[in-house]
Amino acid sequence: MFRDPFDIDNYAQDPDHYLAVPFVPTEEDTVEAMLSLAGVGPGDRLYDLGCGDGRIVIAAARDRDARGVGVDVDPLRIADAMEFAGWAGVEHMVDFREEDLFSVDVREATVVSLYLLQSINVQLRPRLLSQLKPGARIVSHAFDMGDWQADERIKVADGYIYKWTVPASVAGLWSWTGADGTPCRLELEQTYQQVTGRAWLGEIEFDLLGAELCGERLEIELQANAATPVQRFTLTFADGALKSAVET
Image 1 (cartoon, rainbow, N blue to C red):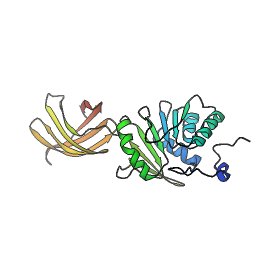
Image 2 (cartoon, rainbow, N blue to C red):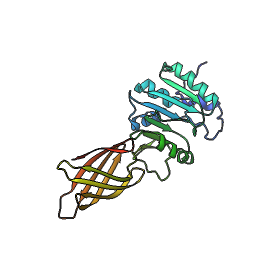
Image 3 (cartoon, helix red, strand yellow):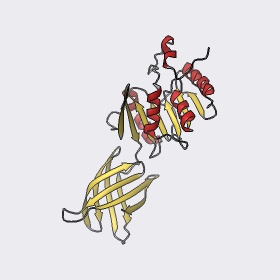
Image 4 (tube, rainbow, N blue to C red):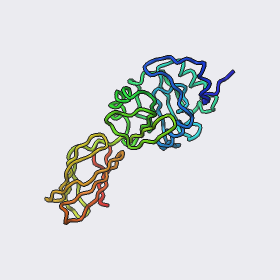
């Protein structure tokens, strides 16, 4: 008899294959919370690394009209996922691959979902940061990314869900011309989405009071001294270059 893939009780009689990460089915409510936190929608392509039976990819396609790819090293889980996708009627929207997590190419993903272990998340982190485009979202059930602090964290019945937005690479020296013709320079240091630095408008050095980096968009606040007004700029970075800078 066919098993409903979204009924966790189906797995009571089905022992896990204890691979690098044991298969633990994600509760349906947690799946929905992960998709909601990531803002998954019709324009997205979701990659689930360590997809197990494929329920996150299938839910994204079934409920949110998103395309998806599930990756797992266990051929039995991939077979389950393909069967479940057919049962849910979304087999034309999803793909399941028997592949190692550390070799999969995720450059097409706009969202990556994880339910692994913290140590594996940390090992995957350089690959995710180098391959994913700025603005891509990563959501992880239960485990964080070590010293890469999450942008958001929410509580669910069986733990926490964490979300990160992949930041553009903004470290370095940048220059542009202000609307009034003033030459502007910005020297930035970066640790993930945390940005510090200093700036010059003309020949005057400004303190960088605050910086908020989300994907390609960096918002900064500058002030020359306590007696001068705060100036705000929104900068957009893409393909390793400063694309635009607007005073706001």
